[in-house]
Image (cartoon, rainbow, N blue to C red; front, side, top):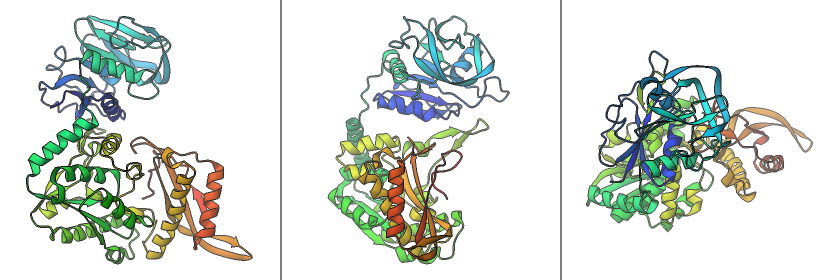
Amino acid sequence: MHEKIIILDFGSQYTQLIARRIRELNVYCEIHPWNKTPELDVNVKGVILSGSPFSTLDENAPYPNLNLIEGKYPLLGICFGSQFLSKNYGGEVLPSKIREYGRANLSFVDDGSILLNGISVDSQVWMSHGDTIISAPTDSTVICSTKDVHIAGFKFKNEKTFGIQFHPEVYHTEGGLQIMKNFVVSICKCSQDWTPASFVEETVSELKNKLGSDSVIMGLSGGVDSTVASVLLHKAIGEKLHCIFVNNGLLRKNEYDEVLDSYKSLGLNIKGVDASDQFYSQLKGISDPEEKRKTIGRVFIEVFEQESKLVSNSKWLGQGTIYPDVIESVSATGGPSQTIKSHHNVGGLPDFMKLDVVEPLKLLFKDEVRRIGKSLKIENKILGRHPFPGPGLGIRILGDVTKEKVRILQEVDHIFINGLKEHNLYDDVWQAGAIFLPIQSVGVMGDERTYENAVALRAVSSTDGMTADWCHLPYEFLAKVSNDIINQVKGVNRVTYDISSKPPATIEWE
């Protein structure tokens, strides 16, 4: 087992970012709800208290029991975490006269602080809190200040316990990764040996022991997660891995053949199943977004189950579940809420098929999955592929789904995505696609009036999909793509570009 850092989550939007920064240092870490502290075994090297949307002054504020942690393990409180340490260990926290939010600069840094080694005066930090620490905990010393926040950071004098009111995990904090490294490596003494190579070696060994001579069925989507999971399983059990790729008729143009070809080059035992007509017939006349999702999920289960019965000695279902899908987060009321993403956005698949689930990637973030994939020599055209929803184009067609609408949207999407690639913009975009709008508009083509379909293009930048900004694609590019779509795709006479960010808008339209 690897050394690890435990993060106690108080519901901050930045908690996953803390974990990812630690993982970047090749150190393993886990996120746990503040009221479900895990067993602190010999592998635990330190603990971090996250930020929170709550105030420590709230009557229902989270109140973790730190009796087994404080003074016994290196401890770092961030924002709410630091205020909790102050309020409950002899200091004082009060509402700030002005909300301290956004960029600030350090006006004082303790030169002798091991936590702030390499951080200089005037370094930019990111504040995000409505309360402030008026007095530091008993037997502690101030290690940094800003012009407006005297106690921006503190250290317990006789312990490796620290608190900082700013967020070192966000990009806006200069030297934030250095601060995390100081805590994780210099203070917690982590050895930084959690690498892609070590993960592959250990995971393959564990899978061999776990699966033995059993067969595993794996549904592939063409995306990064299912691909990397399949390659890991294949390294462990070889031909006993049976991959199934279902064409639901809602894939991108030529995607079915291209994905099958890509997987064959990886040496995977894969079967393609074209069930397009089955999906189309069941989706006929359905416009409600949720009903469409459920229908697509139900038909997928039916097709997948039928194909799985043809595999002998199948006892396991492989899934590409990743860490954000299984993290227990803190709800708005302060209690834990389980947020587990189901296969293809539908629940019940494992129970329905009476198979045990094996999830090789359940400890990894998306960017880590790509690092593992690179170490496994998986082609970049798969690793760099934009996320694509399980229900496919079915949720990018507003209203009912027909073959003709799918054809139109496939052509529009193909021009848009290829255009991004040709203009070297694809890798600058986190996710992109086209939306078929449920409206028609008047147009003029040649000397004739037209009354045809409108489409919307969507491109966003993001790190994990939880928040996203619309991409400021060049006007010249958008003009060319719009012109190409209208000239080349019969049935479209108007192209729009979605400039909404998430929140308040979602990335997908349904």
